[in-house]
Image (cartoon, rainbow, N blue to C red; front, top):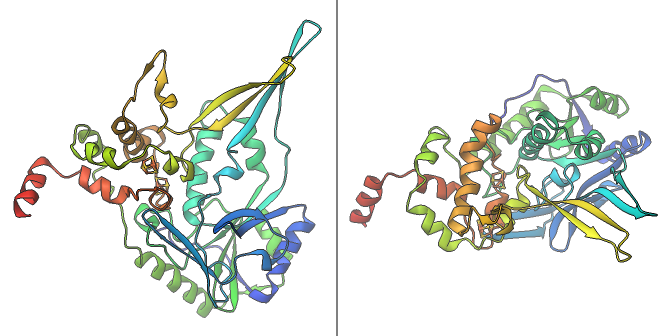
Length: 380
Ligand code: SF4
Ligand code: SF4
C-alpha cells in the first residue's frame, strides 16, 4: 500500500467545498469530475458540487457493474466508473495531421489539440499510477508525443484517497493505493463532515492558500489514516507478484491458456478500460471532395485480428495467442520493458469483461505446476 505522506494537511468543511471549484475557475481551469450518466459514472464538466454523484455507490464484481442512490452524504462514495483518467491525456481519437492537395501541391499540417487547463476532481490512486505509466510511454521514451504533452500539461489532478474498496479492487497488493502516492496536485480524504486537503505540488499549494481552511487536527488525520488502512485491509482480491516475471514466461505452454481462451470473446473491453494500455493505430480518412484527408490516432486493442497483422501474416491468429500476449505483457514483459508492472490493480478489466474473466484468478492458475494440477484433480 502507498505509505502516509509527510505533506502538510489542511481541513475544509464539506459545505465549503464549492470554493475549490470557484478558485479553480478563477485560475482558468475547467473542472471535470465524476457524474452519473446512462447508468454509469463518467467524467464530465462540473460547475458545482451538486453535479457530483452525492450519495451514490457503485458495486462491482466480475462482469457486473451497478450504481445506486443511497441516503449517504458522501460526495465520493462511487469509487470509479469505466473511465480512468487516461482519456483526458491520451485521447481515444486524436486527429494528427490534415493533408490537402491544392493546385498540384500537397500540404501537411499537424492538428495539435487546443491547450486547455483542466482540473480533474476525484482521481483515484490506481489511476494516478496508471497515468504515471502513460507519462513514461508518451513523454519519457525516445519519442516524446506532443499531442499527449499538450493535453497532459493542462491537467491539475485532484486525487481522492479511497476509504471504500470495491470487490474487484486489488491496488493494495500492487502498492498503488488506496492512498494517492504521488503525481497529484491535491489529494482529498473525505470524512463525515469535512474534507482533508493535502497539496502535492506548488500549483496545489497555491490553490490551498486561496481556500478557507485550517490545519487538520491529529484526530482528523488519524481518522483519515484509519479509514484508508481499513480500505486496504478490506480488499479481498490480490495479486502475488513474488515470482514474476519469470514464472509467467515459464508458463507459456500451460494448459490454462486454452481454458481461458475458451471463455474469452476477444471483445477488447479489458484493454479499453485499462488505465495503462497504450496501443493505438492510425487511420487515414479521405474527405468527400478527394482533395484532402485527415490522419488520426485511435485506441487499439491487442485482442483484434488487425492488431496482430504484420507484413502479410497474423502473428496472433487465435484468442489464446492474444490473451496470452495481453496477460504476459501486463504482468511480465512490461516489467522488463518499463521497470514496473503493467497492472495497477484497478480491477476494471474484471468488472467490464462480459464473461467475468479475472486476472487475479488466471495468474495463480497459470503458475500452478503440472504436478499441482494432477494432485488437485486426484483429490477432487
Ligand atoms: S490489467 Fe485490469 S486491473 Fe490491471 S490496471 Fe488494467 S484494467 Fe486495471
Ligand atoms: S478477457 Fe474479457 S474483456 Fe478481455 S477480450 Fe476477453 S472477453 Fe473481452
